[in-house]
Amino acid sequence: MRTTIHIFIADDHQMFVDGLKRLLQTRREFHIVGEAYDGASALHFLQNNQVDVLILDINMPGMDGMEVTKQVHSHFPEVKVLILSMYTDATFAKTLMEQGAAGYLIKNTGKEELFEAIHCVVKNGQYISKEVAIKSSLIAENKPAREDFGKTYNLTRREGEILKLLVQGKTSPEIAESLYLATYTVDTHRKNLLRKLNVKNTAGLVRFAIVHDLMNV
Amino acid sequence: MRTTIHIFIADDHQMFVDGLKRLLQTRREFHIVGEAYDGASALHFLQNNQVDVLILDINMPGMDGMEVTKQVHSHFPEVKVLILSMYTDATFAKTLMEQGAAGYLIKNTGKEELFEAIHCVVKNGQYISKEVAIKSSLIAENKPAREDFGKTYNLTRREGEILKLLVQGKTSPEIAESLYLATYTVDTHRKNLLRKLNVKNTAGLVRFAIVHDLMNV
DNA sequence: AGAAAAATACCTAATTGTTGGTATTTTTCA
DNA sequence: TGAAAAATACCAACAATTAGGTATTTTTCT
Image 1 (cartoon, chains in turn yellow, red, orange, brown):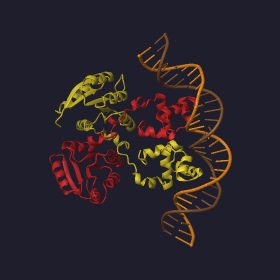
Image 2 (image 1 turned 90 degrees about the vertical axis):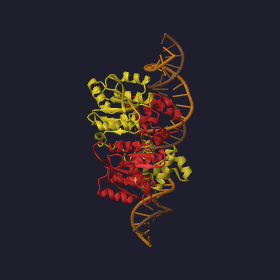
Image 3 (image 1 turned 45 degrees about the horizontal axis):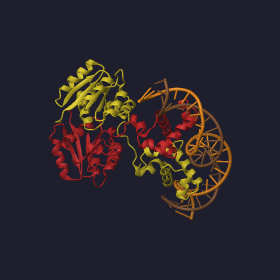
Image 4 (image 1 turned 180 degrees about the vertical axis):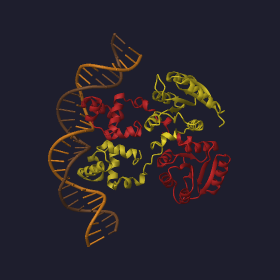
C-alpha cells in the first residue's frame, strides 16, 4: 500500500484508544489523525479534516454509535466507518451495516484481521467479523436465480405472469383485460399465489417478487 | 499474514492463468494449489483438496461461472469465490454476489487491489471493484442514506413509518392499532403517500419502497 | 389414451383500499 | 411568538381484495 490511510478513532476508553493507536502505528501506512471520546467531537473533527476511516466503538456514551454511523454516512459519505463492538449479534451488525457502516469487527479481533479490515473498507469493500458472519447468513445469502424462480417456488407460468402485473400496480380487472381473462380467473390465480408464497395480501406478493428478484425493477 | 492462503484458479485462458499465477507468487502468503480451464474440473478438484479461495473467470465455457458459483457456495461453503470479470455491470455483479460469490473484480484491476481482495474474502469480507461499485447502489455509499429518504422524497416521519408497515403487509386497521391511531388517520397518510410518490395503489408503494431501498428487506 | 397439472370461470360475503373531501390539534422552526 | 408543516380525525361512496368454496376445460406428460 503506497498511500497513507488517515484514521480517526472514536472510543470512550482512553486506554483502548491508546492501545489501538500503538497497534496501528506499527504499520507505516496508517496515520492516526485524531481521536475523540464521544460522538459529537468525532463529527466535529470530520468537518475540518480529511479522514479515510473512522474507527468507532459502538458502546460510546453521549451519542450512540448507531446515530454517529448514520450521521457520518449521510454527512461524510467518503469516510468509511469501521465498527468495533463487543457483540457478536448478527442482527445488530446487520443494522449497523445498513446504516452505512463499512465494517463490523468484534473487539477481541487479532491485529492482522484489524489491519485487513481497514484496508478492505478503504478499498470500498465491506468487512464483517468471522464470529459474526458465521452466526447468520449475513453475507452472501443464497437467493435462487431468476430463471428457476417458478421451479423453486412452484409457481406456474400464468401465476408468474400475473405476479409481474401485480408488481406493476395493476388491479385484477386491469390484469383480466390485458390477458383476455375473466376477473374471476385472475382472482383465482391471486388466491393461489397468496397460498403458495405464504403471504396475506398484495403487498406481500409485491415484496416477495422484488426481494427475490423476479422482476427487473 | 502468517497463514498460507490456498488458491485455485479457474479460467479458460491459459495465458491469463499463468500471468495470474506469477503475480500471486510474488507474495509468500499465496499458494496456488491448482488450476482448471472449465467449471466441472474446478468442482472436481474442490472435492479432494483444501482450497481457501477460488478465483473464477466468469466467462468460462462448459459450465458458466454463475452456475459454478452456486455449486461451490452450496457444496463447499468454506471456499470463497472471487469473481474476475470484464463487465462493470452492477446488476451482473450483484446477482453473482447473491449466488454466493465473496468478491467481484474486473480484470484490469491492479495487483495490489487483487491481493487486497483475496485477503478480504478470506477474512469473510466481501469485496467489490470500485469501478463496479460506483456504477450503482451496490454498496452502501451510493444509496441515498436511509435517513435522507424522507428528505429526498418529501416524506414525513410518520409517512415513512406507515410505508414500512405497509411493506410488511399490514393493513390500515393493523397499522392503526400498532401506532395507536385511528384507521382514518392511517388512511389519510396513505392518501398522501400515494400522491407524493405518484403511484396508484399499495403495490406501487411497496414497490417504490423496496426499489428505493427504504426497507431492510 | 388416461392421469395429473394448469388454466379457466363462477358465486357470496366480508374486509380492505381508494377517492375526494373537511377540519382540528400538535409540532417545528424562523 | 407566529406561521407553516405535520399529524390527527372524520364522513361517504365506490372499487378492489380476500376468503371460502365449486366446477369445467385445456394442456402436459407418462
